Length: 374
Ligand code: ADP
Ligand code: GN1
Ligand code: MG
Image (cartoon, rainbow, N blue to C red; front, side, top):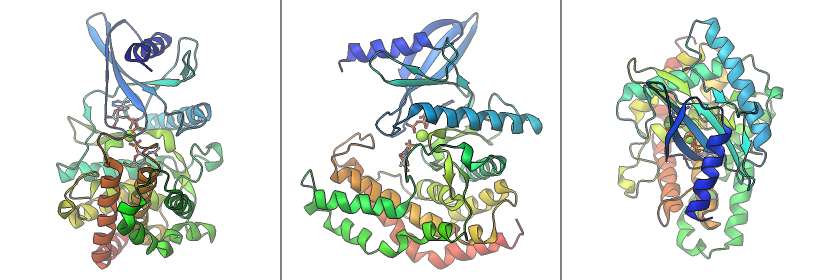
């Protein structure tokens, strides 16, 4: 698609939405790996109103209609819970803006799907932990998200990506990518392949615990990166959980684990210098404390005990997904440089290794907070 054609599609989508006032401008926005996000500014009298407009990734989310059903259902439920405790329903959950014909998404003339949200003002989305307090606040917010949705039945949710955190299924897909080797990249990543294969036994731990009923199926977010939380600029509180595309039935330990792999890394997810990558054990502790506080007693003893396992498996799974994508020619995660997915994979594997060194510390920390009786 040419730039002009792209602009035409964006304008088509902007026109379709129930935005208020006069259009001023739009620009690309954020650092997500999946959707195309734009910030759209309108003027209504003397007031500026901003919106988030997103082209949903149709390759990744095969059925955007059911995805929006999930998001509308969950946000409506959250709004009623937030109203019950006297919170701000405009800022503490995502608010979908409908199209002019009252639908929660728009399909443009070439078939792409678009949706819009109210922009959450006076809040920041961080790519890396600068202030430990922000990470703690993100933990409380993700825990609270889990807690608030505890009464939302998992069977009301569609599976937007099949087997999203089914680690054994991810391992199978990885092995297929290794043997397919469609881009001839296998020879340069033998070491990473060996590392992943040597962890085959770890892959099935959480799915087995789910199967045996030792871990319950819950409504989970499934993509709990720090940059999927808005931190309020004035109060410093984790005000809103965003990026609800993968809210599905899942495991609480995966939500915990995904936050740890992203936010408790001493380096960024795509750091090239691996000597900078490690698990920050203090951040791990802070997150554990915040997450358990946010969950307000809704986790079982087994779930709490398994939190370190969630951290390790999610990190391993993510590393494996990045390598799968690298082997397949970078068709899933958006990349910004050559070997970007390989760099991302390496940080995750290095982090797994470091977690293994810090395993007893991680478990002692969790035990310490379990004793507080949440
Ligand atoms: P992706 O699935 O590609 O990660 P996200 O839904 O996370 O897309 O959006 C990308 C970025 O856009 C976020 O990291 C955040 O910075 C910003 N963003 C998304 N929704 C909102 C919102 N309602 N208000 C403010 N910023 C938002
Ligand atoms: C993607 O959409 P974003 O950037 O928040 C991915 C997550 C990965 C993450 C790795 C739908 O998250 O599963 O953990 O990248 N989301 C999807 O950074 O695949
Ligand atoms: Mg995101």
